[in-house]
Amino acid sequence: MQTLESGPAKLLDYLQLMRVDRPIGCFLLLWPTLWALWFAGKGNPDPTIVVIFLLGTYVMRAAGCIINDIADRNVDPHVHRTRNRPLARGVIRVAHAAVLFILLLGIAFLLVLQLNFETIRVAFIAAAVAVVYPYLKRFTHLPQLVLGIAFSMGIPLAYTALTGHIPDIAWMLFAANFLWIVAYDTQYAMADRRDDLLIGVKSTAILFGRFDKLIVGVLHLATLVLLAVFGLMNTMSWHYYLGLLMASGFAVYQQYLCKDNLPERCFRAFQNNNWFGAMVFTGIVLSFMQSKH
Image (cartoon, rainbow, N blue to C red; front, side):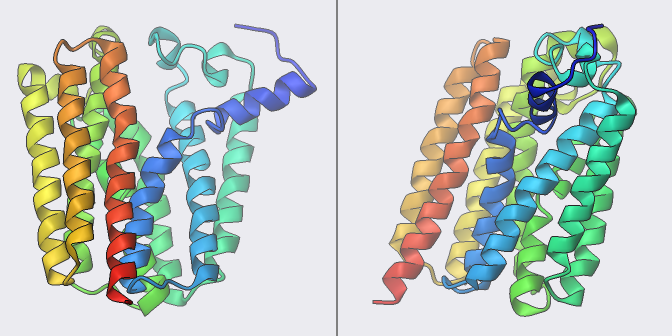
């Protein structure tokens, strides 16, 4: 355990605790939220609400990282990829991390108070799921399913913020995103599988075993099929489907990265999902822009 520091070094530790140096998780949380904002706003969402969601996504992702590290503080030192996290190194006290977590939740609450009552109600459900998720890997091989719910909550939140309710069609977008999350978080778990097996942490990567890449591929395919059907139901232009085609190319590339089950390449595949989400969003934006002409 390292000695507790103060000053600039301590600030860097807190920024690392919030994963400011690793924005990939924020992007993966943000893309589906933006999908939903553009669909719910029919290509022209309220700019103020978009800003609130941008800030809220960043704050809640940081809070989620902190509660995850609090839950994993005795596990992370034994995992190669996470052993240098601040709580794992002992450079931040758990109590101080908990205070920062509560502060971030408070900021998120102030942001959601700017929205309607239905959105506030859904936000409490989203926060509860985010808090529960980190502890499930001790008890089930399916924590990725709960993360799928947690990281998809931006979709019903976006619809309630812009329309005041959650239309039935929104749950198709929720389902597509849920499947995508299980796919990429399985890749994330594949990167840690060797260490997780030694210390008894459970994941879909361990559950799926030698079928891991096949199941990830099926999940990506199911995601794209649902998104295509969702596009048809929303009469999207060809630009949207071009975005899906580009996203499918990245999904195929991820299969190539994972083909030998090398941890560092599986982690690169996980990170590559940022481009998957970005391509879908680009197609959505271009399609709505085309419809206005």
